[in-house]
Each structure stands twice: as C-alpha cells, then as structure tokens.
Image (cartoon, rainbow, N blue to C red; front, side):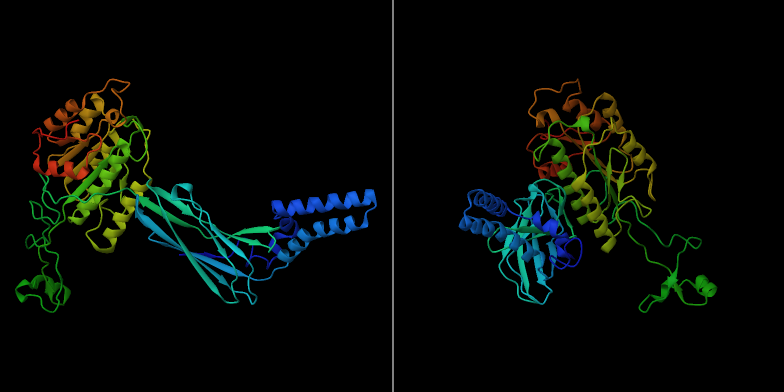
Length: 458
C-alpha cells in the first residue's frame, strides 16, 4: 500500500499550486479561447468606440482569470493512497488496485478528477470523477489491471485534477508514491512423475544426513521433555554439565537445478508465443513443481548466475518463510529475464562443475531448457550432466517456432542434438511449437536416460 501528498507540499492549493504563473498555465482550450475572444473584443471596441462591446470583451477576458485566481487561492488539502492486491500475478491474471482519497482540510472540495498512471500494456489509463468530498470525508474507487506479458510494471504516480465549474482552468498535481506490479510467467500444473536417476524430494533415496555417525561424530543437543532416555549421550552430558541427547537421523532434501538458456542467438522470434517465452514458462513451471515436491531448488542461467545466490548453499531453504522468499525471488527473476549476449554455455558449465554446495560436484537433479545449439555447444551441454543425479533436457528448435524453413546458419538437427545428449545420459526431449509442457514432463517421467522416446521429436 502506498500513500502520499501531491508533490511540493501538503496538498493542492495549500501552497499556491506552485505560483500564480503555474495556475495560468492550467488554462484549458476553452479558457484560452475565452481570454483571446475577450481581448479581441476589447481591442475592436476601443477602435470602433463601442462601449457595450468593450464591456462584453472585459467580461470574457475576466472570467477565466477569475477562475484561475479562485483555484489558486483554494486551501483544502487531500491525501491519497493506493493498495495493490496482489503485488505478484501470473501473466494473464488480474490484479486489483484500490485508490483512496481523503479530504484532510476543513473545507469541502470542488470537482476532482482522479487519474492513475499505468503502462499501456496493463490497459487503459483509469480516470474517476469525484463530485464533492466533505471535510474529513473519504472516497474509494478501484480498477483492475492485467498483462499477457511478464515483467515489472510501475503504477503511479496518482494524479489529481482540479477544475472550475465552467471548465476554463484545469490544474494537475501528482502524488509522490509508486507501486510495482510483478507479472511472472504462466505456470502449468505438472504430474508428480519420478525422473530417472533421482530420489524424491525429501531424501528417501541414497542420500541422508546423519547427525549420529559414531562416537567421534556426534552432534548432541539439550534434553527436551519427551526425549527417549536411551538417546542420552553421557559423554557430552558430563562435558557440558547438563543432560544432552543424540540428534535423530534427519532426511536431507534432494537438490534440483533448473537451467535456462537465455542466449539471444539461440532463439528466433519474440512475443508471448515465441520459443524463448515457452522456455521461461517451462522453467517457472518446473521450479514451482519441484518446490511443491520438497526439493531444494535453484535457478541457473547460461550467464552462470544462480538464484538464490546468497546464503551459503545457493539453493532454496529447507522450508518455511525462507523457502517461500527464495521461490518468490526466483519467480521475480523469471519475470524480468531477457536475452543474454553470451555465445555459449561455458559459464553455466563452470557453475555446475564447481558448485557442490555441500554435496558432490553438481549433485542433484538437473532440468535444462536449451535453445539452438551448434556442434561445440551440443558437446558442452552433454557434459553438463553429472553422474550423481538425473538430467532432463527440453530442446527447442527456434526456427520451427518462428515458422521458418531453416536457420540462416548451419546447425545440427534437433534429432542430432537429442541423440548426443542421450548418449551422454540425458533424458532429452524435443519441444515442438504448441506443445504443452505438462505432456513433455510426463514423457520425461516415463523415459529412461540414453533411450529414445516416442513423441516429443520436432
């Protein structure tokens, strides 16, 4: 929620609207026409010696000036606020914006026009007319915004227009507060399939974290009511002078890395139906699904940047608020991710090879969304898979997505890329145009590393 007063000071009119000159600049076309007609009539009356015409001219010229002076001396104060609900939505979903205007002066307001500045991609600019707000009164209006394109969009500043009853003068003042609407990629619900070579999220596979691994590798904790007395660790009890017990065996959550290829040269076309947007949406769907399945997840791009990138492990936390914050951070990153100028996947390879994060090098499940690859990058992508975990690659042919017969430069065919990846142990599937990611995810669960699949070939 944001709130504020118009730029400059307390509110419109209280500080002179920025001076009399600023008020004169608020003359509308009608007001300028009245002023010009009055001056012309007065000049003609002087030349022709017509006293009645002179009085008409003076009246026409004086009316807009009187309106300017009246608005200039207006002394009421107003405050405005905006509430955005929710602040993060998926592409195509709506968010509600509620505007609130409070008259904090002792005088009723005149006619007010409220306008909020929003990017055109979110829809038409909302305008509201408030007839009269009593002293201490409040008015609330709302509107909805939506976008089919992901991104971060500023809302505001809120603008307030003051006008006279004749429509001769119109003064605009802006509030200082802004809000930001984050539109994240669309996500698909994915079936809970088991990817080849990886345990389920909560560590029921080969890796478990043991707090008790022997007399020389014990991490005791203080005794709590209800603890089994058979777990009392007497040596630590004697050392610390209080009752200590051995920790129970704790399952370690499996890790997963979602790799998104963002290279500009790897994709053709643009827009919500392009290959790149499909890859971004697929990466978002995979992240959400893996988090729901209990994995510790990180997002990695071809630039070598990982999200979350702080906090030691580089993966999302084991649960609770930290995990939700990490998920929000990854989705916010995907909301604004764009094309990189990199030529290859070497930085991602270095990040995977050197980033053990508490386990073996590059351990855990690897989900990759790859654009066009030449021979060298295909070989490098094949090496991204580590022996300790499963690896699934969704390979896109951007020429097919863009409706082109062939790429302008020679590249291995999709079948050749898939074959090389499968030979290296990947579960590799093609992502032809219009394919639902949920179907490909289901195929990845039924496929086996190194064995070709039916369906999914471009």
